Image 1 (cartoon, rainbow over the protein chains, first blue to last red):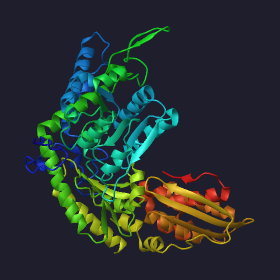
Image 2 (image 1 turned 90 degrees about the vertical axis):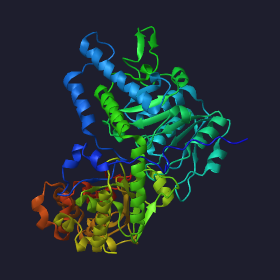
Image 3 (image 1 turned 90 degrees about the horizontal axis):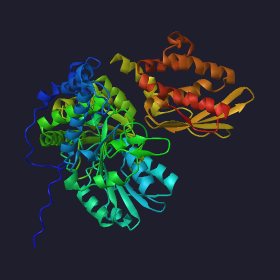
Image 4 (image 1 turned 135 degrees about the horizontal axis):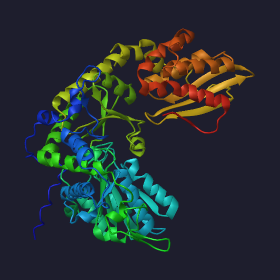
Length: 424
Length: 148
């Protein structure tokens, strides 16, 4: 019996990625028109937050200029129009993730809020003391702290699957942690500190085999390759609009309908109710059950515009372009004396973390900034990862659709300047 | 670019590479820890205070060039000073760093070498970490100083 071929992970190299003209795309982003300290901006920090194309800026502006009112409740034309626009954006997110229904798309502030929602509603609501949550050692603080808080409040056990010296999840060790008490695996699809692309298909298969649900932190993966939540069969998927070239303050939690039906609400207030009296309050159906208060209306519209923008460019093309940049940058940085790359997994996306002998990342960052090169320095909200590699901080360059080899040239020239100032 | 050269001038790089008064002194009677989570600078300040006089100031730590140089320069400046003089010096240094005290430079003696930090607001906390920690040691504050 032949085993059917595993579908290729969209986060991982496809040799035939369509061609992509980054210079053309770059012209869509007004921020690049402004020099930094007299130099062109080489923005290498999209992993922290991405720049915005004119189409997204215009969508938000148009919303406020011509189509803005509070949603869902008004009988007047403007409110109907605003509601239509927001629900259209929800539909775009559904299509972007290939979710079965728009009712499985909950708008939140960002990935952090999405995870907190799951930790509260699923964790506190549906789990009991003695149940286990498994995370990995390469998680961002937003996929660690909510589970620690759950542990401290509810007696849930928190287990951590180790990573190796390359920043890969040790799959055998992960599997050993799974058992009858495992109720949830919470895992990043791409590590923000290391760039590691995890083998989600295997993780989800193993977790489901033990009856555990899986939450995927997609903050770093959603911008770099197609996401298909039905194909993945993940139970929860979270991502942030601002990393996807959309506005800040908007994000998405996808969850399977059966889970949203079973989970108690997260925040209470208006919009998430069907009826309220002092005797009895009835909650609305999902997704509104989880959207208390007036939403970030313009944010949803901006997110929809961002999804339209990158879908038109093609996520495969964008992913292929970024992979080529990452490969090129990795080779050039490896050639620098005294530079060590942190995070050398077999499959990586967009992120290049490194340290330099004798120069603290913070000093690297300041010198690079003087050359118009923006990188992030510090612990990247992943202190356990830093501890694992025995460093206090790294410098991190990350790639987005608007980056070019010119940006890599500027990074390398900037690092030469660092050497010059600090001596070698 | 000249701002950068100002920030990372030779004296600062020298202090960062070869920090003075590095290591725990014996004896010492006050100590405190400081931490800048923004970039991972960590510093422990050790003091020997007798009456009103600061007999010994030493430090241990890891961090960026600015934080190490500032700690090193601070220990050189404070040895032998009175507690009151030390607090006054910190006040003038802090003002100079945060922009209120541009005229203070000539009263800062060798600390003036850090005046370039003013042009890099994101680095001010690096320069002041050792000083905040020193004050905490003097006051025997019980929790770790954190600057962000």
